[in-house]
Length: 638
Image (tube, rainbow, N blue to C red; front, side, top):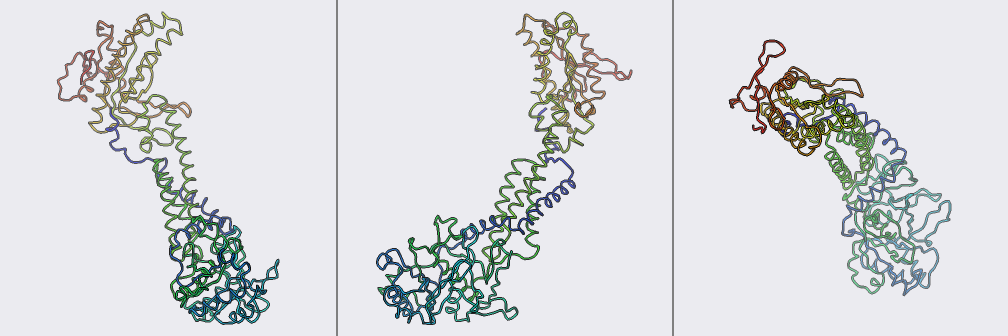
């Protein structure tokens, strides 16, 4: 019997339960896994993972070219080495006046100037009084008194909110103070560059700011990615769209030499320090994949200014998260899909591969929305997919172990590895209620009996006899399994091998293959007996009778839990037993072995065209039917 032919109608992937039960299981897993994830996200427990994913996505999508409308006048280590720190007022005044003269739309001084530094204070105050120039201040908080800007100057605070993990992801645009509304440096610069009022409200909702026609809503407590941070004031997410370095940088000393000043015409310029010796740098999402440890504060301000300018020009939209129940639905859908993979894909390797690929595709697909200013619940959805798969995989693995145990219990060691694997693959069709289902079969039964075993048992002691009988039965069992037969039982001093069970053979080709495999098995058994007798000359010789018969039978399990056994019963088996007993009437050959015999039913299955000689016949137990016997020579041919 060849396994390829046995697979005729059982190639489909099997399952452990009906389809409706699998769908119910998927739905239960979706609720068990999905609802806790949704609640954990609401409580902010998943925020670190969401922020990590946001950072990597931001870094991955960041454009290589710098921002378009904002330049950075960089105070470098070389400049500080020449001028000292803080930068003297004279040099700072010269830089600002040169930038204004070159056509810069607005200049932001990202250097505190609350106290004089060197000479040139009057010149600096004069240039800082220009309405296009803004110098930074620091807001008061519970721990510090803040830092003021010089009197009679235009100021914007430079405070940058820092998340609990030390990363700058939010921009503070304005705050209400005891002295009124204070605006940030980027707010002032963006308004001056675009020519719109610094405070422009949405006519339909005055609580919301507008830049051009773009409404920029503030971060609400517990919304978007930020559920564990202080969102007081008017905050928005910094949209880092450009990789480091964010802005085109020009050394301050080069500006003083009047070199390349035409580049500043029509652009905003921020004067800031880019020296490692001055602590004005932060960690940002852009540092996740660039290898850079930090981003200079002036670069962050430049990114915010460009972001607001893009809002005004209609070239960008504020990052926003999905509202209402949509995120929860996406998370539940992710759990559902992950569970479906584990429940419905029953080949373990394929399921794991599909789960991995699906997780990657899910992450990429949801992350891509960020490029269109929409923040999706990527991390919770990936967790949902993963845990949905693992939960289902664990449940199915438990069912699989139980069913494997049931199959092993029923069939024991009576099958070849190939046939055992085939049974497991086809368990949907073969199993029912944790055990093989009963069904009608067409089989070829081989019954081999060790002749003279009773006399041998009387002549030997117990250990010697058991060794003697086990040696031949073990060898016969090995031969049966090697030929694809199912060892239905050991009969004490014999063996019953069935071809066509427990996997049913339904086509003529499969049944012919079974019969031919039975003949080859019989021949191999007879040759094995002769070989054993030749090897163990000092022991009692083995004698074997082998009978084959083909026909209908019933296969199913008998016994109770813990002692079930798969049996093949029916008239076909009984006739094989009658034929095996009848072989006693035939004379043995020179080796003491009697010929292999089969019924005409088996012979016609092996080769219907061949004229098989009828050696003898006997009457069936019904007293009427004649059973014709075909006697075979020692060497069996098909």
